[in-house]
Length: 371
Image (cartoon, rainbow, N blue to C red; front, side, top):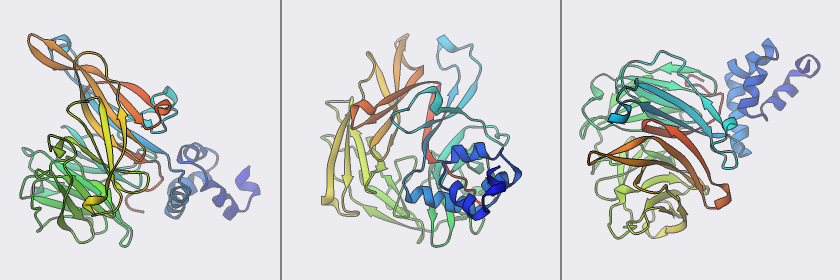
């Protein structure tokens, strides 16, 4: 009834103030609602910009796990995968109402799926390091990217990063397939190309952290390697030695609520404590400042950290227990995704099942790659 009584421009102004979850529900109201919400790129862009400016974008955690027989106790299990997303609001983290079971809207190719990164609600994935997709989990929109050809070496430990350039309205996907092969995909050109630039030091972090339209990795020299997405060039950035071991590779990069590069690590003495530092002035080594400590309160017995994400005011950590079988240590098939917040009453926990957990955060938007 609303679209029959209100002028359309007023209706659009009201709709763009709503969260994506509500808008998806409203696509069933009428064909016109469906068309505006899911088929109008101008509306998708205005809704995203409005939510971004009002700081009301919903952020979710996307994760997948593989369930397969890694030890004798689960040897008869069938191999399967689990794909879910969790709302990254600490007050509801882990509640059933915040969890969504997902499935790819395309037939996934055989092989391991890698979460390369996300930008503006679009998640980029690679299957078996050969087939690449751009996918919006909120709407189901997806695009298969062109074949990267010989840019990928399946024997090499993959490095990746994703970012958006507003000046040229294009997404770029960075991949490193060995120590001499670096490639980049441009959504504007719709092609992959091999980069001529080579970093001074090997990338250690599996996924680059986006800030100031540049990707940041911890490198093998305990510093940072930075890739400028616009200029497509690498540069080196120093890091302090945060703990007595001087092993920054054990840390995790992120972006703070103030838009500063952040670094989190656990100390040798207090392994259950994650220390968070921020670089107050970008590129200035002396501006690194300790922000807060977070305590994970791990389970009793043997345990370990899996994936760790540094968010604006919190950390999401995959914590798993370890069982010893015949003098060998095995990660249990059940673990926890725990959100640690500097305000302890806002912490939350969610139990997951499976091995090889991979997770990234994404924003809920209506955008697609070809908008």
